[in-house]
Image (cartoon, rainbow, N blue to C red; front, side, top):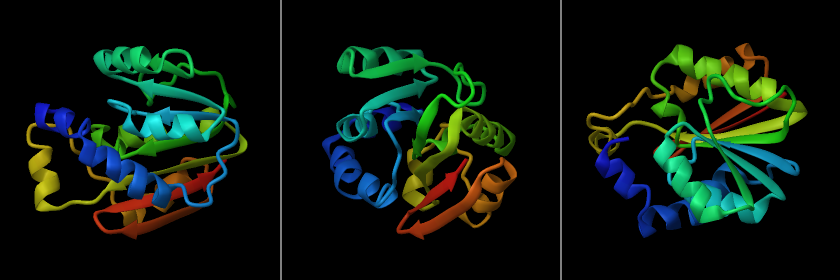
Length: 185
């Protein structure tokens, strides 16, 4: 993430957006179970909300600096693991649910995104839910990602990609500037 993006993802404005709009919309009526995996939490504003919502939360973050800061901030309640979501360091069927919020576009290629989807399916227990959201494009979104990794996910084809990864009943809904998704193992 570029420096502007790192700064913005820590602001009170983004915190309010996450708490009041993004997570309530993305997780409305979602049953994640008791042992949830969060992919790519970055500075962890989504982690803060999820930690209050689920009994056990594991956050997988590829950036060592962000993982260390998140580990320091959450102490013991959240298990923070530094690692790559395209090759997860977890055994098969480890989690009851998995979530990814506004991070898929930071995975550098469609092939890598598809590996991530396959890994999520692998680490979910049978019947486990994968849910989340990502952004759609706009001028401001592109500007915020100047010299940043930005491989947008097409919401129109995402349900098919989830199905190809082995998920069942994929659902994708678009909203203002974003889309949300759900699929089950």
